[in-house]
Image 1: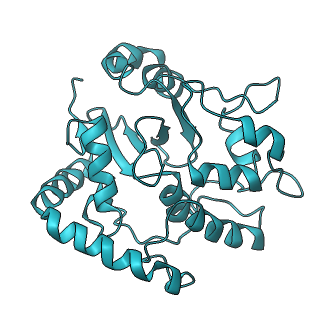
Image 2 (image 1 turned 120 degrees about the vertical axis):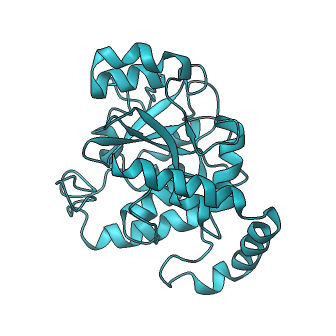
Length: 252
């Protein structure tokens, strides 16, 4: 799998970058985020602010595909279908953890993209239906993988499938949120050895990259560990979820 060598390089680079440099880059871009809000997203926009930029772009052509290699419309139907405000106000994850700011902003705009990926109970009412990571992997790649991923189920008990990948998958994992209140997005890949790694620090950056607003090395799932703005968030998630590593080593 060609991506394996790339994510190994990303791991090495991310851990040789000093905390001081990462903190300086984070602080510098943070102070300029609001003055450069409409430049290509090397800016430090994050959370609901970055999500609103994605929404602005999607509004221009809601039926356009979110992916350039497969037809996955951003919005199903003639217009976006938001989650009603009264429902959104009481919606939380089954664990009791709150929605992230970016997810709340997106659901205020549309539910159809996530609905198509199994996020909601069929009876409606905004009830969210996560799966532990091992069951999601079994559903997506085949039941024979469930046992291999069982050791990660306790670490990632609430997972949601996101659009993205052909032989791989993108998964929002509801774990300890970062300082922005965002939950990490994982990459899953079964080409060669099974791979589970941190790909995005939150739904905000996942959306922005999918919409073409973030510059990311497409050759490595874990390249955002090297990003001046998003690297510190990635490392905090790594510390919480993967014992400081960029990915979980197989066998898990």
